[in-house]
Length: 424
Image 1 (cartoon, helix red, strand yellow):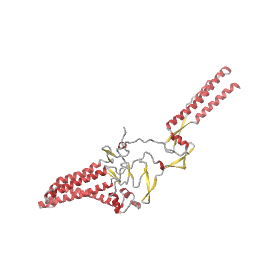
Image 2: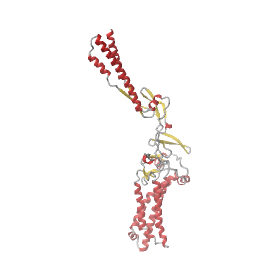
Image 3: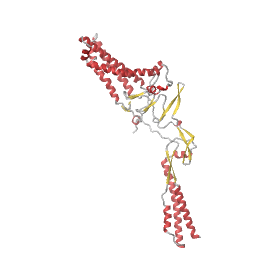
Image 4: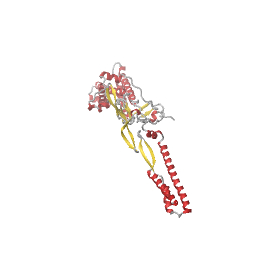
């Protein structure tokens, strides 16, 4: 049965709903993020917003506080799902390195089996033009492709991601080209939600002070939930608020978090900077590119084709053109046949010589004959020269060892001299 792409996915991602939703390997941290958002809002609605329903005239105005909190929370959760449950911009892997980038350097050759094999050269980097300025891109060994500009390989998800910003453990996903907009909106909306909860909790403390004609301490004792929410919102505001400010700076200068931390000290020219206004338009007003991966598609078995090498390397073409195992077996069979023919010829000549000596001459020493026969029936010695083909794979080149051929020659010459003695 044919499998779908998400079932044989080589990255570390996790899929649910039949490959419709994709998460990072640390998707469990998303549960913590959900609890950090939902639990405080439930406390706010039950212990704060519910008591503020009738504190304003007309009476129905107080319901706006409760409804706004619920709607705002749902909005934040939708942004969180759009950030964490979609393809961040993963570039599909190649099944083999780009063949057009290989080149052979005859000046750097390796001597194998008495032959000079040209060394295979593969450039690790190459330059592409971005806004008229050359930018160096690197080759990814894992994905077997040259990373596009601003692309980086995430070690956590084990994927190359376009316009890689960072891997966020709070959303359990990489932040890249296709979800950076939603990530920023999620962080900034969380900041506004923290401000809203803090303000409404403080307002309720003020209402309690007016109702009971008391001090702040008495009001805080009447509503400890409001105090807890204010402390929690204040601490969270430092985190999400600082993150919002930092990404506002990155958007205005058209940088990514990865570029800012890695190239901060290099004083490089930012070739992607289009101006503050255009940079914001690029992030928020451009159409999100479709995913390059169809995770629900069926996997098509790729027909593996043997790479075609230069015609000057005829011996390498013979080695790479067929199955190396069958070639080794053929070479072994040929070598054993040649050895058997040579041994059979020597044994037949010995038999004729023994018969002739039995009728015309004295008998030979049996120990000498046994030594000759034992030398003829030695197991063939095979030597394997393992060499590297120009594509980096190993192919067996088998040949009969010189000792075997020498042994056969000595036996033949010894038989020939024995057969001449009766005629002298």
